[in-house]
Length: 199
Image (cartoon, helix red, strand yellow):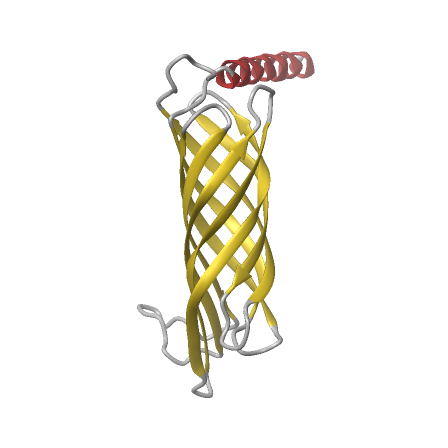
């Protein structure tokens, strides 16, 4: 019946997914380009308050061998209570707006060979954080940023699913740096392959 056919389709799909993953395990891509969603409960500059910041992270990793690579990352996070946008443009005096922009780079270590690929990285760079509200408060700062963490990837054939990523994120602030946690996930495009396959 329909249930039996559905079970067969699920079994076939699972087999194909496992076959793609098994083939991907044997290949170390030269470059991985990533795009993902990121969330952080980030401290508002010059205050003790925190805001729920949603953002996008774009990264690129050049793999020098099977386990070691260099990553560059561009990330942005944004939060607005209300009144941030008119129909065609962003307002200069929202009720409350927080945003950040960061660029970081550093080493990444990946354990390849299984159905999933755990990894860790340590990134450093520069970030700008800003805050503004309807009462005319408008301030921000630029300074050093550090991200240390890791995640779990699921390699398929030409893409990799980033199931989870968790980082300790130290952002600049006007008085002193703020300690934050960010979590996210996304997808990576695998480009090229290191000569010799798994090296």
